[in-house]
Image 1 (cartoon, rainbow, N blue to C red):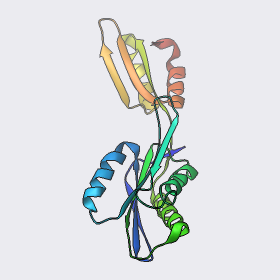
Image 2: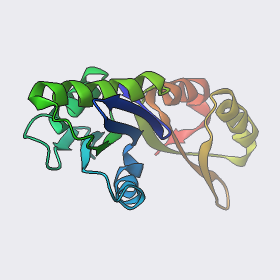
Image 3: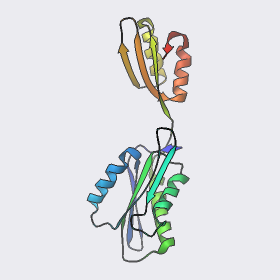
Length: 191
């Protein structure tokens, strides 16, 4: 699966109609839709599609044609997200009507092309599930722990200092955590 970490946009013109596609991480999706509706008050349609993982690692997806003929815009946009195996992403395509009707086939092509165009310029990254782990260790091995954290490039770290030990919470993808724990196995106690 792939993810995006920034806002990308591309514009496609078809028979005087303008399709402005926006691809964003899912957490930005709702606020961007509101902002685009304010920014483009004369736009005719705001077609949307999204895919994200819920708390149970299930893919939740949806789309909206926003007044376009049923199945001609939201579903094709969602199909492009699915085809590129994008997750935790949303796409909003702003359409300005140019006066010429495109027909159902023309709309499907236009929305699909706009979606593909923005994905082509986006920097896609491989999705790695991040996991939260807790462990405890004595102060005497804390320097070794800090070194291993740095070597594994683990940057999401929270430390709780107690009288005789340190309790540490880290967040990283599963492969990195496995490497970290295999390095320090006998010096720490996983909670």
